[in-house]
Amino acid sequence: MTPPTKSELRAALLQARRAVPPELRAAEAEALCGWLPGLVGPGQTVCAYVPVGSEPGSIALLDRLLELGSRVLLPVARNGADGVPLPLQWAEYQPGTLRSADFGLREPAPPYLPAETVNQAAMILVPALAVDRSGARLGRGAGFYDRTLGAARAETKLVAVVRDDELLDELPAEPHDIRMTHAVTPTGGVVLLAR
Image (cartoon, rainbow, N blue to C red; front, side, top):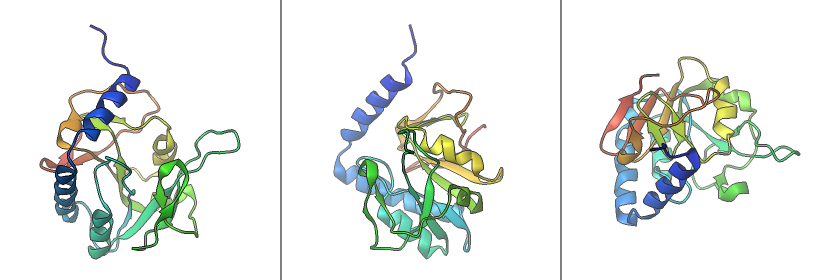
């Protein structure tokens, strides 16, 4: 039997996410907030994201990072003139200031920080459709994070934020894919991945 392609996996995972009841999504988002103190300390920079649609996470998670004393940066996604995704820029998160942006995302207002700002992060929370135990991450396929994470320091925690059933034994991976160091799930908590 042929293993599923990345496109087939994406479609199946997105369909499963859409089937999750809103109450369960909210409970999982709250549970994710509880794992943050073990991942980051006061004064550290965290690159995070604003969840879209059925993605795990919440604005409350961003607020919790601020309460823990972290500097929180959020991505600004843009395509180049040729339509190819550029490395993510970053902007400081301030509660209540998010605005609609390209690709159906919400992002902070300017000023925008250059892509290299990612090298200031102690931890990067990375959206994922799934991650496997070796750190291979399945994103949505645009490549924004693969173009960005290579600029992170070697000691930076790269944390895929997924639902419990999205931490898999194995995913297809390409040589250019940046591997995650950790996963965080609502009930499984923080999982160290064998990178």
